[in-house]
Amino acid sequence: MKTYSILYALVALVVLGCSTSEDTSTNLTETGEETFYAADYALLMKNNGELTVQTLEATKTGFEFSSAESSFENIPVPELTFREGSTFAFYTKLTACDGQVVLHDFNEDGSKTVDVFGDKLDCALEVTSIAFSGGVLFVAYTIEETSKIDRYFVRAIDLAQEENNSTDIALDKKPVQMAITNGRLFVLTFDLDITEEYGLSVIDMASLSVIHEKGLGYDVVNIFTDTRQQLIISYEELHTILNSATLGVQYVNYGGATAPEFNRVEQNFFDESGRLFYVKPIIADFVGIPAIYDFTNNLGVLYYYENFLTATQLGIEYKIGNTTMVSYDVTNDDMIVGYQKSDDADKGGLLRIQLEPGPEFLGNIDLNGVPYRFFFQD
Image (cartoon, rainbow, N blue to C red; front, side, top):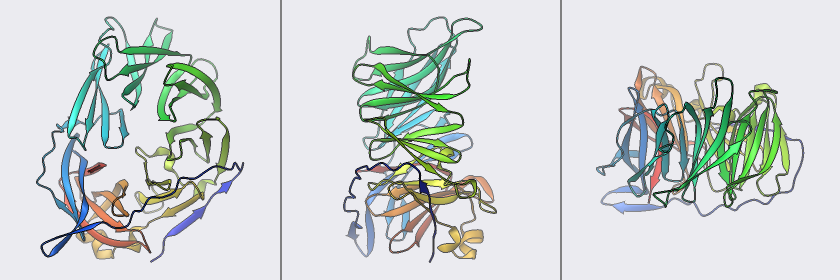
């Protein structure tokens, strides 16, 4: 079977170290006559405007529903989310002046609720992004000082303390998105008042102070971090790789027709070697394609369904419509693809795809919901 690979041009070469892959050989255990993969999962799904959870276990030929229960409670699909490892966080607005962040650890099956703005009594604020790492929750927000003047902040909340646990860090531009790596919080900002250009504010997480400002120009789409403590700044026709320690940059250009288009993805999942698993948006008659981008070699690989499914499986048996999620099973070295049914917008399924030596379909499970986020349970 074939895949489609696209090599992108590295414009400014910088020598960088690469992390080495750990052993991801298939880990199997025997249970009776059937062979099970040594992994359990929790899957968040969208259904009728809510997020629900389904626990799963993997077999040699795909997935089975697990009898394990999760304490995650159904919620309306949130607008602001953040993920670190097995922990999923989301923001809920409670009043014009207050909101809360819930952090749920699917590995420990426990939740923590954080009141974000309990000290604000009379205000009009907008939360624009959340992030967390090392026991600190960051909430970016704007607050209306007058009808013509807004002020911008990132609030840092120490999750280990119950009182006097927040610090506000002032910014001079509107915060749009946040990413964390190498002990630093990177805040994508937008100049609403003068230039309408994007910028980057770098916050030291130890001192909770802005240590560097950098202009990024126009048309930035999003930012995220990779497995080598680098920041990826994504544009429509290129991406910038920022060294989080030195703040040195390198640029990777691509034409519009061959752009990998990971810049509009709601979620990013990396394997240990630094490959990004994501959904590439619509191309011709396809509504989302499973894809992998290798940042080390600047190589994109597209996994068209026709390469590992028959026409009957694709259109009749599984009724695959839009691709909604792509993840990677670290334990078993397989790609996990979530999709929406073509005949029912509230139902979907999961595919397990073997990657090496070539893409091979291993199994499918139909779901009473549309896959949204995929978590591993130790």
